[in-house]
Amino acid sequence: MRVRCLVTLALVAWMTGAITARSAEDGQAFEQIERGRYLAVVGDCIACHTAPGGKPFAGGAALETPFGTLLGPNITPDVATGLGNWSEEDFWRTLHEGIGKNGVRLYPAMPYPAYTKVTREDASAIWAYLRTLEAVRNEVRPNQLEFPFNLRRPATSTWDLINFRPSVFRPDPTKSETWNRGAYLVEGLGHCGTCHTPKNITGGDQDRQALQGALLQDWYAPDVTPDLRTGIGSWSAEEIVRYLKTGANSFDIASGPMAEVVENSTSHMTDADLIAIATYLKDSAPRNAAAVTALSAEDRRMVAGRAIYEDRCTPCHDSVGAGVSTLFPRLANAPLVQATDPTSLIRVVLIGSRAGATAAAPTAPAMPAFGWNLGDQEIADVLTYVRNAWGNAAQPVQPADVAKLRGRLQRNAAGGG
Ligand code: HEC
Ligand code: HEC
Ligand code: HEC
Image (cartoon, rainbow, N blue to C red; front, side, top):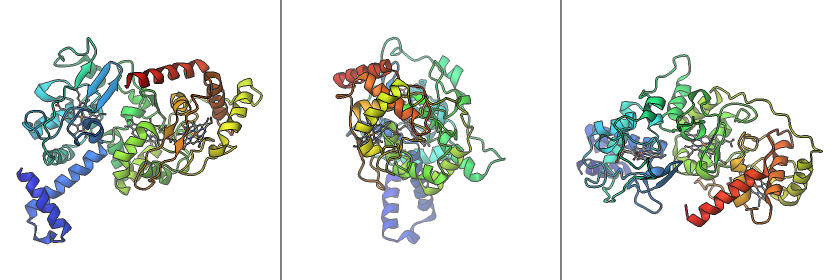
């Protein structure tokens, strides 16, 4: 309560320009809370801890895992159903070690394997901010997993033994301050690897392939290393910043889970932090994807795919795949189009997609759905063509993969999940 009063006072003082009248102590508290608010945005805590249409941070957002559904808990200061009785130390253990209420091991759906890199000082600021939130009474039972994962949790999990070691970020003294800030954000609070790093069979990060692209639930989070073909090696730092700030640049437009990341998180980051992220991504280890030879233009699939492309796709993507900057993504020389795993591409053609809207790019263009008027073979052919035309080169798309995803998306739509 006291802290919240201080914040309100500080805000009013700030807004009326009476900032000089504030005592130094209030100023410090205000600064820490404001920094914590910003860091919570960088960490995108709201995404998993807010139900659709619910009160911010009051929990209830459903997260699909391969083992069933987990709900993000209530992290407002409510005593009965939130973190009202928590100390800062409890919170530090959650972020740093993945330990939750009553000392239970959390599932790594809470990205503590990344948040463990966060410094104590930054964790304290996030905690100070969380204490200023409205206490919302909202009972959430996070564990909706299927048997046997719904059983009581063991004190130490085998998963952690294999995949997790608490460790705060250590700067690399051979790199610039900007690079290190970028590494801290990408590996830590930004938890970019949660989606972009390939996983081992237990779901842990394959650190040696950091950021090289991974399959989520029916989306592919592409390679964001500087590999020239499958990664973002041809994007300048400015283009990366533009993508993260607005969700679109002259190469691509963010859709699906990345559109949400941009809307909730990266579009609110400072330019300095976005430049740091771009600097780090441009200078991370490239994937060096195995070379692939493009299919010949005479290949049966290429001929069929080209006819469909010219009929249905050229109005927006252009006959040579050039797209229209920030409106229709470029398909020629586009990393996502040549990604090893074509799941996102199949998905976008089957059910369409609307790019996320941001303050900087408020009207989001849409990709129409073709699933209702193109068959599995046709979608496979048009994507095989797109992946092997205009200098692109990638494995052909199989009709069976289209059929599989089509079935899964239909089941999801029918089951509402
Ligand atoms: C990708 C989704 C996701 C993001 C992002 C996320 N969380 Fe979580 N968080 C979860 C889930 C799921 C759980 C519950 C896990 C479990 O029950 O094992 C959890 C648990 C917690 C807990 C423990 C609560 C309790 O009742 O035990 C705290 C505290 C917490 N998160 C804080 C945060 C903060 C702060 C951030 C941002 C820096 C954040 N989370 C970002 C998914 C997320
Ligand atoms: C919740 C999962 C998720 C998280 C977290 C995430 N991404 Fe993504 N990202 C994706 C997906 C999925 C795509 C593909 C989007 C599309 O198909 O338009 C993507 C696309 C991108 C692209 C464009 C690549 C291309 O070839 O078009 C960049 C750059 C990127 N992400 C950077 C980041 C950075 C930096 C972070 C951390 C701050 C991050 N992402 C966090 C899921 C995620
Ligand atoms: C009416 C305009 C329009 C037409 C016609 C159209 N698209 Fe798109 N396409 C878009 C827009 C807009 C996006 C970006 C959507 C997003 O980011 O959510 C997009 C995205 C894509 C993507 C994802 C690319 C990436 O890097 O994110 C692929 C692949 C694609 N379209 C292929 C096709 C194919 C193949 C056809 C023809 C069968 C087609 N499109 C027809 C507008 C169109």
